[in-house]
Image 1 (cartoon, rainbow, N blue to C red):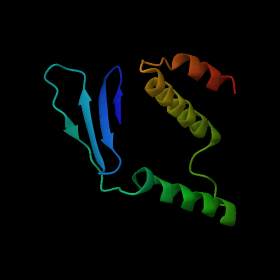
Image 2 (cartoon, helix red, strand yellow):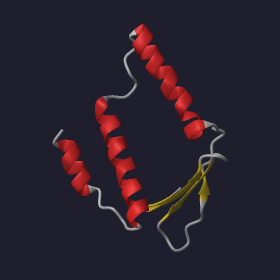
Image 3 (cartoon, helix red, strand yellow):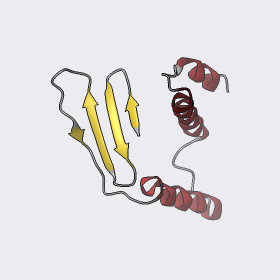
Length: 101
């Protein structure tokens, strides 16, 4: 995965756990911020499943709310659209939709 933003770029490989970040500067070095996570979604699937089960079975409050879920979904939809259309996707219209919910 390669994400370009206004202040830098992020390159990640969930299969190897490699994460690299580069700030926007001519002399900026690529910074390695890799983790030891592996597995589905960088081991995130297991965490999500355990937290969901704990919430449903034990009544433990979720660690994140609906707002974070909606925001994450909006970003994922924008990433998918950018991949499909091969263009930069402006997030401002999505945030307006998110704010109206």
